[in-house]
Image (tube, rainbow, N blue to C red; front, side):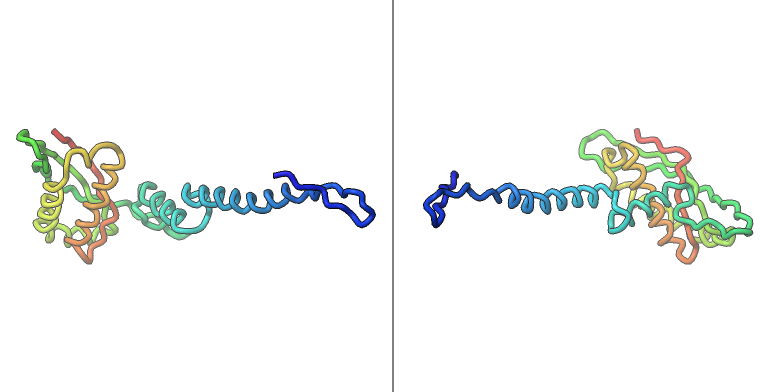
Length: 179
């Protein structure tokens, strides 16, 4: 849209006002900054917020200690305590006629040696929770590293529930075969 030149008091026409570019920049700049901020927020690159908390938890869980804190300076690190679980063999939830099975050998990483006795006492309950959960899983839920990670988290939560006051830091897969 072209602006007509406004006549001045002496009859000469003044040049048209040039402020449209500044208005456009003032309107576009906040939108651009908001878009960049949203992209950084959702990608987890900002050092605060929900995404950063999730990333820190995920890094701690993958770091091999299952979220355990490092010992204070001067204290010797306690060796990890592992407890073998009996092999679990169960069928998965499939809609076709052909049965699909999972065979799982795992170890529990415990917070202390004293937790092993409590877990041994709760082993029937623990295996029941594992079997029940695995029977409801579909084979496609176990595909890829994300499926394995999700299975590890669910089994750790169920083991912690079954052996409660004992602290289970992680579930380690020795062998997992889906057939």
